Image (tube, helix red, strand yellow):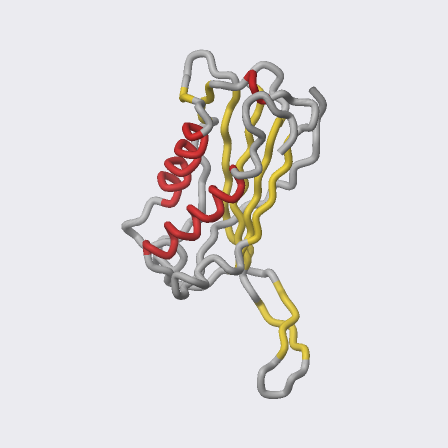
Length: 181
């Protein structure tokens, strides 16, 4: 197996909006090591927990919502859909994820009144999931989802956005017996 580049972004995916547009800004991508035959991977374990965002005021994550647990639940679901099971004693691969927010992100937008381009602060977030071969310690697959951030999203919106991001990433995970996605 060879190492392959995986962009490690870290941030959270939150934006308010109606159900039809709640995910329109989310960009999802994934890469797999082209030399890996995924049929050899049937079990996984977790690489500890990832800190999401320190948000004591609940501006980005409602106080009652545990984004870490939701992300872990969604990744577990996607791996199980592919016939994999959790095994903390002798896993084939290790699963890690990270999320966070870049509050200093800037973007050029068009001012609706003047029609001119203006530079605006547009906080961005990303969720990254990495699958690592347990024997070699090399990354075999990585997925990333990025999105704009808005304050005070409700729990339902966050769940929909996270589900969209994780599902989109794992659609690009090669199936067992395939090294192509």
